[in-house]
Amino acid sequence: MKQLSILLVLLIFFTSCIPLRIAPNIKDYKIKVAKKFKRKLPNNYAFIFEDPKEADDFYHFINLKYELNHNNVERNVPFAVNNKKYFLSFYETTIPTKTLDFFPVLFEATIAMTLGGQDSYGGEVEITRTNSWYLVLTVCDPNLEDCLEPNNKYRAEVLSYLRDLKLEYLSSYNNVVHY
Image (cartoon, rainbow, N blue to C red; front, top):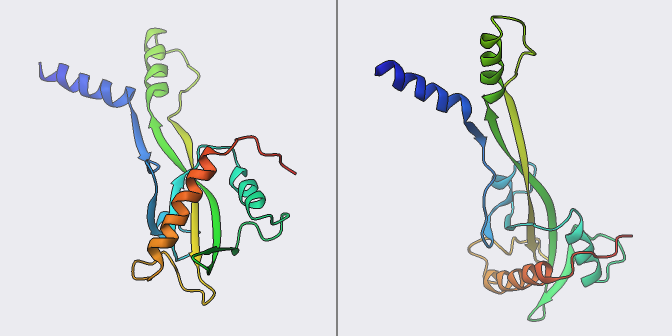
């Protein structure tokens, strides 16, 4: 009985996918330091949400919304809330979910045993990746103060603006004309 339970555990282990890294699942949005979300991003607080649209759709959305004519679209885009000027920067980034799959190794070993020790194709452990895309938005004022920092006095109104911007983007038509 003990051998059967060990065999069952090994069978489950070798036929299952083991997650090595899981991309975060953000239902609405998250506020956190961008560098803690992904190392290559700035050390500012950021408004982060999943991007279900195609690559560069947010770029084209911002370009059209603020009439930028493809000039400085990703960094320091000026906007105003309650007659106060702010600057929006955004980063499109991906975080992959990686899983380890032992099934090909187990399958090849079974075929080799069935064929009486003949050479098989040599199954390898597979690592599968699925990417999740995110938009990371940072906002500063003309004095370069981080407006999403928890103690910033304008944080609430900037967050309200970013929530509305996100909803506008997600409800906009997907197929923006790309130049």
